[in-house]
Image (cartoon, rainbow, N blue to C red; front, side, top):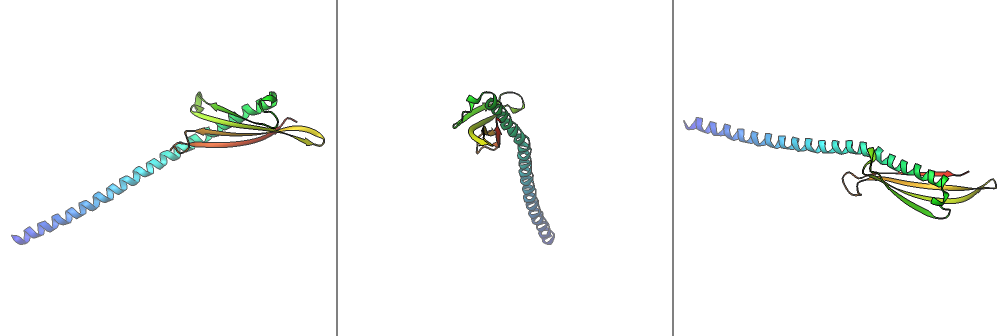
Length: 144
């Protein structure tokens, strides 16, 4: 009787080791899956936010180009002007853009022309936050 009791305890001890091993393996696999799901969510989020930040910057550039060409006082020669936009409607809600415009006079073939350098930064969130994204555009145009 003592021989079969010893055998039963050995089997129980072996089952306990197997159970602990399986518990560790499943816990590790679960943690890995949660981590992968988080990375996938962040990747999807950036895939959507990146183009929106680009379009926020592009919208700000287009507005500034129009202002520079049709209201030259908005970007005077020799000065750098800065404008900020907060988008509150549609697909760009929550995005913002900051635009700098610098104008310089250059002479080409004896004719003076004003060259505008416009730099825009489209952003979502704050730097250092998990969902922060930004895109920068720079455009150079002339009135000639």
